[in-house]
Image (cartoon, rainbow, N blue to C red; front, side, top):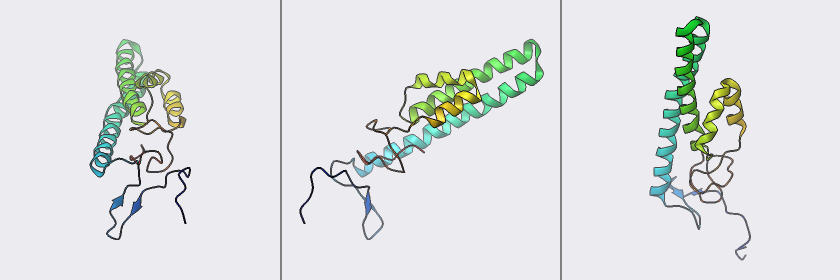
Length: 138
């Protein structure tokens, strides 16, 4: 059986020891791990900023008045910063973080945008990019 050069790349395979064996034209194991760590860090940072931002918006809106407005404004800033990191993690421009100005609606819009590979910007599905073998954003 001959190798078809026009066939799409196969997903990563595992050897007998369970170690990832990248296919041709894929990134190195060290680069895979570096990208995986970076994606985890970005996810952690987006939650660390976005979660309190959303909470501050809720508290500020419940308080009303000038103090409530200021608290909501700080919450909006944190949410936009968190969503900017989240958008970048999913392979989009950080400017998509401005959807945080729409609060929960902006978060939903950002959630339904297609994931793109952090490494090569190809659209991804699953845990690994089919184009380059990099870990896909979750």
